[in-house]
Length: 139
Image (cartoon, rainbow, N blue to C red; front, top):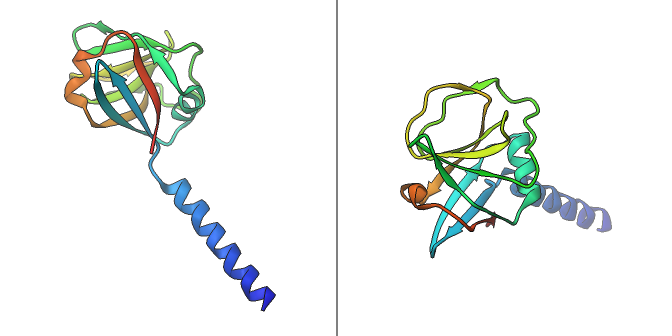
């Protein structure tokens, strides 16, 4: 009986671990009474951002197509492609400068851009982001 109970407990534990690992990783961006959700991609860059959370960053417009902000430390870009072509509503890192770049317009492939995640809600508010944007883990 103890062996069966132990087996049932182990099975439940492995199922819970698998479900937690399979759940999408999301961050909430809060600013000026607004919220947006970003689903992070499964890569080292996203993991290094998660380890820094919570963060408050100041975003500024760049080139009329993206908002950029600098994290306290550079994010890992280990194993990432040399270039990336982000779509509107994607969060990236520009490796040479170490900044987060959130695109609100389409952008061609650029060397040094690393995919970080995609907006699943609130992408229409990217252009409104400015100072004191709070990034934190979301359930």
